[in-house]
Length: 160
Image 1 (cartoon, rainbow, N blue to C red):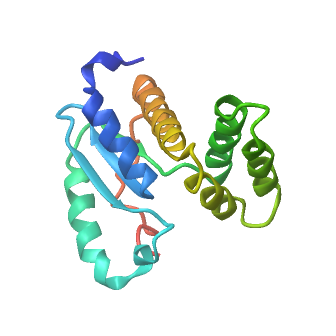
Image 2 (cartoon, rainbow, N blue to C red; image 1 turned 60 degrees about the horizontal axis):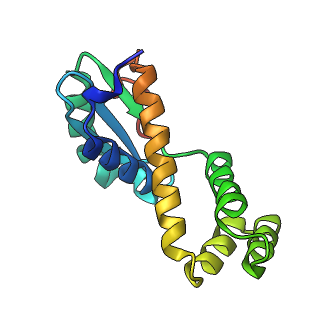
């Protein structure tokens, strides 16, 4: 297990912002340098024009000895953050609570949740809550120091 104190809070914040934006983020655990590429959620992930950009990042990351890879959250992880926000941050008597639960139970739960919460008085509270959870997620990965065993740019399916 790693000592989290070796990782500055600004670094954790930056990685959290990258994965929140859908990026795959690589951290050189020795120098604390970061390299990021578009995650699969971006249409550009499959675009030939971006292969050169990706390759430059992957070449740099390939030269690093101790690499930690951070992926964007999976849908169920993001959904859990929304559920936790509703449960812990919205008062029981507030009508918004039932509207948000309803939004999560319908089609397009992420879109519905976003529309409702962003037009509410809890908008900033949501952003702060989500940011905190993403930083916690990054911190947990840093503590476990799960280094990438396979060099990230050498995979046949790097560019699908």
